[in-house]
Image (cartoon, rainbow, N blue to C red; front, side, top):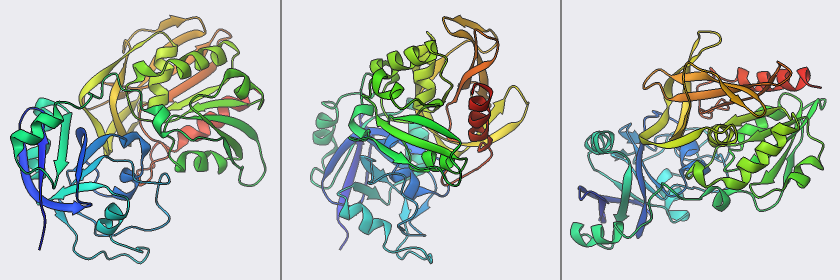
Length: 373
């Protein structure tokens, strides 16, 4: 017999459904993702830490869970919301069902609700605090607990998901460069994409010092995606400022784009409901090409779209823009010597589970390091 479950949003809207995954109670920020595929990568993306994720695609779990597609060592979502879970997985790589995986890792979910109505509500009202419970089925009682939870704005979460110890992802084939990657919530596919290009990647904790970074004599610096409010990332921001002062080539993805913006003296702000999915159109302003991108972020950089910004390290400009809402999707920094010094994007060029329109950005990073070798 199915177990009832309840989802309650902080504005009082509630949805009654059926337990999916582990029984219990969980709290987080309610968001939605528009990806039709790639739920395993979504669940294991550290950027989703402390978020209750709604899948807008109605049928989830068809391909089960395999041992190859995880983006980290665990599921990070705080809770999971689906409309119609697959009863039986069907894929030659599957080793277990999604439901079993959620249960084994204690992830509380809910199914059988109108996820279209929930998504429309979040688009109109914005991402907000929420809870899923199989223990409290009274909306008013559960709402009281929701309102006691901290908001996402002001939350320092990168230090909660970063690696505890440094590790190395060796270059595939001949080693060409050494890169230090600061782990703010890194996905496993990111250093792999660099290793494929002959880069030896030293992944360091978010708390790594300037001395620890420079001791590795890196050819380039990388900062990863991650969860939380970029205004709380004081240490990574100061670290990046010091590295830019030394003309270290830099590439940032997602949270790394926001840290880059703050290092350049720009602000950041919280989006109403964020960009999450694998179908987000972005314009590369240098080439005029439109890329379909994978995204997962609730904050953005506040920068002028049509004016350069003078910084202590050179001239900064917006390089990429969202075609949905004109949000900044990339930055570039021309150094004091007139050559490109650093760049970043708000989306995910490593793109597991796709698309791969933006994979060239890793080649651009290689070219950047070659140009400054």
